Length: 215
Image 1 (cartoon, rainbow, N blue to C red):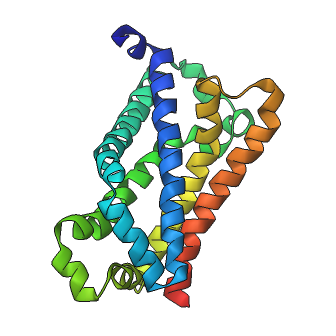
Image 2: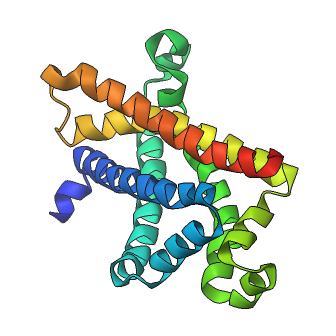
């Protein structure tokens, strides 16, 4: 088994599995965040559930490891691809051979990672380890809404999720192909599903930031 995951095929398969795991997490996270539009009671109830549910508490470290593994494997695959790529390849017309998102997965991935660190500092750490800071703002709802008072943070937030949408646009389909789920018969449907999911994530999270900053 260890030999399989050290191979090129094994690494790609592991990358795909962790990617699909994160796809599911993002959808759950978006649903929870959309309760902000329902007001303080709705979001505070969702926040309490997310913070006390035993299954979610167990999944948090698993999720963290999933993120780390996905990012690490992405970097390893990029380095391996660069080593194996012929020198003449650089002379090819990249725009004609592939889409920008597929050629720059490592770039968008690292930029998303930078935002994730910022996001953890602003949200996860206070919620988990600095409850006094959250309580000083009022409730979890008040604390979250206050983050979007900053125009700079709102802009960074929106840009990050646009990049995430672009990353998912290629990653969603690639993961299904690698794991063997994407059958030729359902190719068009899966492509459309991947596009719809990517747009949903990008627009959904961005809409929250823009609404609570400007409205």
